[in-house]
Image 1 (cartoon, rainbow, N blue to C red):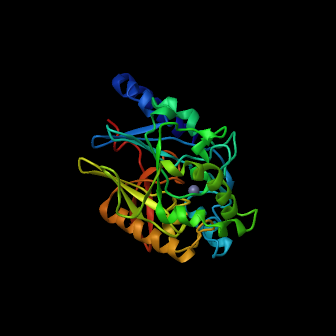
Image 2 (image 1 turned 90 degrees about the horizontal axis):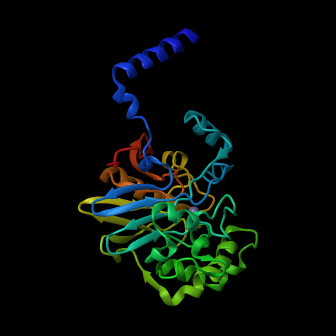
Image 3 (image 1 turned 60 degrees about the horizontal axis):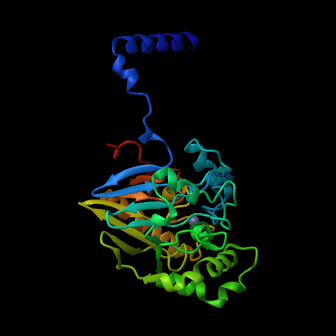
Length: 323
Ligand SMILES: [Zn+2]
């Protein structure tokens, strides 16, 4: 083994003497820095930012709560992943259309699923993307769980002082219902209902309510992705024929959710509908080969979907769209 390695290394060294350009080409450029990730989509610029860096228990039962733990263990081993540790992405996406700067989801903020210092990093990272909270014109929410709306406020005031907001009409009505506060106080529903009241309800007069099929701004349309929450939305983004789907929480784990879309998800509020939505969205993504921005997939949380057996497989974006 050692001889092989040494021979391999000396071959590499020889190659770099003969082709000095090959060595130079491996020096990373600023554009290749992992966060933020920036790509072009037609005339639009797309930037993804990592709001949280945390390793948690899972993916079972976050994915596969209706299955035996051992089934997840086998799936993870098959994919060379640990059976019981899981590092989800928490990745807001920014689209600059040339006319407007649009932020999809706001991360954990001070109150979300991932507390500081591991979570709530979005506001502090905007500068690295050449942006600032003041420059966000529109905040679009996929749904109202705490890891998506927690970043709306900072220190009790709106983090994005010039922003208008876009929220699904059905989603807003669901969370506004006082019945949400009757949920068990240690559960996700109750916590989201509280953060909805503290963080989103005070912004109501700056919110535009949308339904599936509505245009958010030219080039961005809302799409039904109900199930994770009753009004969960995805968004179709298109510029000069290039397309991207911002799918919010249509996957909690890029291997498990895609390989086993029918397995129930712990945080889905409507289990069967969540599974049906995953199948429909993944099928569209695979058929149309559309770029995906997947909030809980691994950073940079951009990729493609392909069919694989009875399920699907995530192909992470690497350098395909770099210029
Ligand atoms: Zn989420």
